[in-house]
Image 1 (cartoon, rainbow, N blue to C red):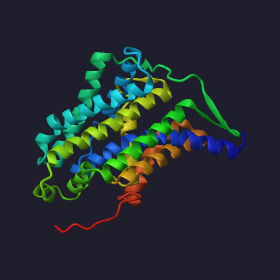
Image 2 (image 1 turned 90 degrees about the vertical axis):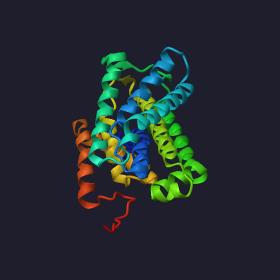
Image 3 (image 1 turned 180 degrees about the vertical axis):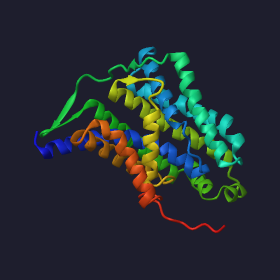
Image 4 (image 1 turned 60 degrees about the vertical axis):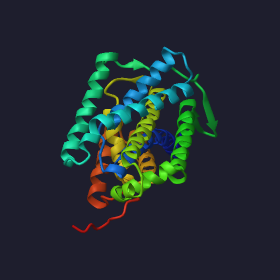
Length: 295
């Protein structure tokens, strides 16, 4: 395989990985856009989604699509429950209190999962035979096609919800000005809860797809992808949905290129180097705009 063929193959691998980052980053950016909260428990919600998908396939003997839907629904409800119990009472508390609570929720999910499912990694069942599609010299396997297809469908569905539905309009109104939205008759608490549910469901989809792609899950699997999805959200412009999508894809491609042409040892370092560079040179992200606040 010559350099150009290897480059394109790494780009395909990067887009697969970046699609998963994008799904997780969308949850970060939706929640931040509504209540300015960095939900550091989001990566662990992604982990819970992976386990629900795993048990749906292994114990209920369901195929991948029903398992994915069940995982998204259950994890969406979990996200709404976490918001109601852990974050809603701190709605007007100092930011540091909410941040510490998010970290506490993260640890709670990790170690509760360890207690019930054990810390031992589990092998995610194969949902495809070794299918490979050849496009000239390039190869896309069945797992990658599944990731591309599901990510595209979910992103189109999310865009439709946000742009075309009453719930989406209410989300945008609450994001712009919560108090004014409430004066106009919008139930901000309900909208915030729904936002947590949608973001958690997208993270669950990412968790199931990671299980399918890498064939392994464990209770601490959400730590690094959660942090990288946060980097992706910041890169694209946190609080901006297209930014989360683009940021996730860019991060995945960069990681794949670093792994393929430098060393897989440096792939994590590359992600956090990107975060440092963005914060230094364009803290608002690719799609963000610098705004002045009157204080």
